[in-house]
Image (tube, rainbow, N blue to C red):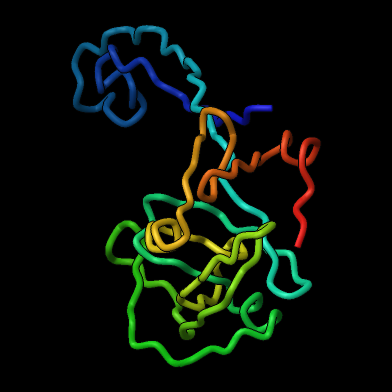
Length: 175
């Protein structure tokens, strides 16, 4: 199922005075009758991000694949929950706006397993991260990971893994 956000577009062909008629009655001599303002909706598709399911020991972890991310991140509670060693970090990370800082708690290095693949994850440990692991370009390059969004598939080397609803039906991850 595709999700959509409702975006309203207001037809603004009418005069500003007509738009705020109650505020400008004092200074507008002839207020034209406002044209009918039509609200229209446009569908903006929202797609699920590509992901891989992997394991660290017996812990299953959902790894979001973000090819636009410049670093790898893991949620603080996940890092401590899987027993990953966390060291101090001097790195500062900001949202895409370049202004809003993210809460970096340290760094870690863990090995994730997906079938026969050992995936090396070097990541910043983040407080308040919305997903378990957000893997960026460094993780993708180091582990030969690719995405095929039009097919809802991620790849590790030559192996293809579906994600989303089809993944739950077709394939169960294994250690």
